[in-house]
Length: 89
Image 1 (tube, rainbow, N blue to C red):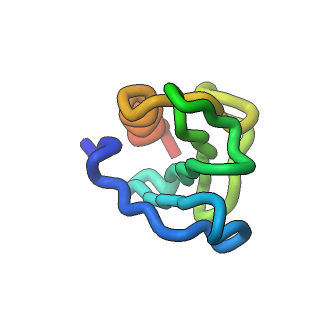
Image 2: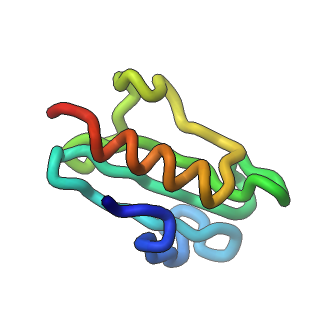
Image 3: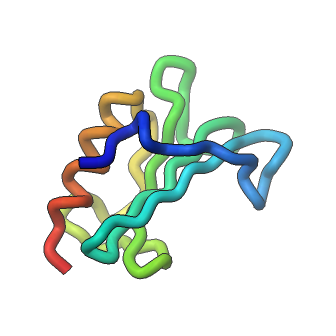
């Protein structure tokens, strides 16, 4: 099962000077987009924001959430990633 340590962060295409992003797709066609930095729903102690994707597009209709999930730490990100990997297509 993939977790936070498997993410590779790169400059965010929309704000390369202020934030970074990691994207990961899973076998069930769902995935995550995790960003950190200025402009995200983050804080010093919870520096990550997660969006769920489906077939490469943002997805707001899962049992996990109907929006982005802000103010997450590394453990929180891993927990969300596990739940996304368990979603049925």
